[in-house]
Length: 181
Image 1 (cartoon, one colour):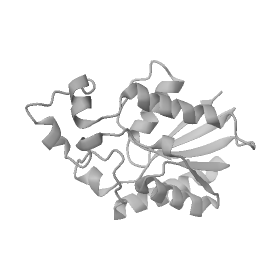
Image 2: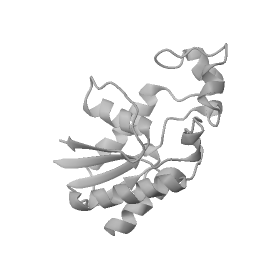
Image 3: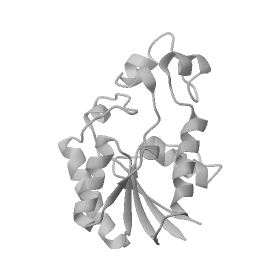
């Protein structure tokens, strides 16, 4: 059995500006760096064996703080990236959602996904499922793994492990503990 500690990255300027980040790079704010240092301290008691991280800057910076505190290496994996939001990346939620041509109830419409080149939820979920499946084939034993990712990444992992999971927002540097069987 593997215990996963799912961690959303620290705060970024895009978070404070309510911008859609997706795959765009955005560094941690001073508060985000403090959050990363705090979550690293919280993880000291969890006997972490390994750290995986998305390869985007905000998660790398968060994972590096954890790595420094726990003295563990980081394995970067692009599959842990946030959902790709295409040309909507960098726009504010208000600019996009208040647009007369934009109607978002549960997810983006097929027309919006085509117009903005947004990754589908099934594709994102399959990408994260592939990451989870890879954990069963590590060339060494790891019982406690920190996974630094994004809100959407956490939702996709939980959706894959708990089929009736209802997605919700996750706070910056929030830790979610779950067992992978």
